[in-house]
Structure formats: C-alpha cells, structure tokens
Length: 173
Image (cartoon, rainbow, N blue to C red; front, side, top):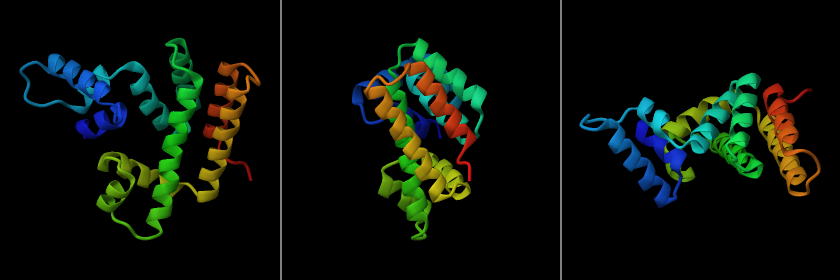
C-alpha cells in the first residue's frame, strides 16, 4: 500500500517520483521496508494534503477539510491546483461508478483507469455509497468554483471554503 499511495501522491512526474523515493530512502536508512506511515510522513506537504483532503471530503469532515485547504493556501498551493486535484478524484469516482455497472473486477478497474489497486479499492467503497447524481452535483460545484476562480469572481480562500462546505454538506434534495 505504501507504493500505491506514493504513486498516487507523486503522479506520473518522474522528477517528483525520484525526489520522493530519494527522501524515503534516506529516511528509512537500513530498514528493509518502506511503510505507509513513512510515505505519509515524508511526502511533500502539498501533495500529501491533497490526498488527505479528499479523504476528509469523502468522510464529510468539514472542519478537517477546511483546515487542510487553509494550510494548503498558506503554503502557497494555488487554489486552481487544489480544485483540479479534487476534480480529478471525483472524475475517478464517476468512472469507477460507471465501470462497476459493467461488473468489472478491481484489477480490471485499476488497469482501465490507470490507477493503483489501493486507490481503486478506496474509490469503489465511496462510489458504492454515493449516487451518480450526487457525484455529478459535486462535479458541477467544482466546475463553478473553478470558473469563479479563473474569472476572479471572489476571494480565493472564501471560494475554496464554500466549495469544501458544499462537498461536505452534500446535495440537498
């Protein structure tokens, strides 16, 4: 699972992957195994926070998610980068939900979506709890926030807080 999380955090950027692996090698020293705790301890803060942020959003833990967004903004992570990362996670959930209807197994989902099995397993659990309408609603909220940020229609921290509140509250019927 440590390798899967590292792959999700680092993405496909070989420079980031090399940097993260190098930091981990120095951190673990002579120890023969890198653990999930090692990865979470040593991952670059912006990348790690996106991973933790989405987990908080999935659990609808608004105070935790708001705190993470505030910290990311203080660390100079661009608001559009945060929104883009959140959108990517919700697109994955929509794709998983769609592919589950075709009765795809986890290994097939992982290959089809080019994501690690660990990430797909988490996505499957969430996608099974959320309706397609709910996920599409979240994507609309993310899109609107993205457009507002791009056109400077409000304070970025306030827009980010509103988005987190919407995603944690869920769709009202």
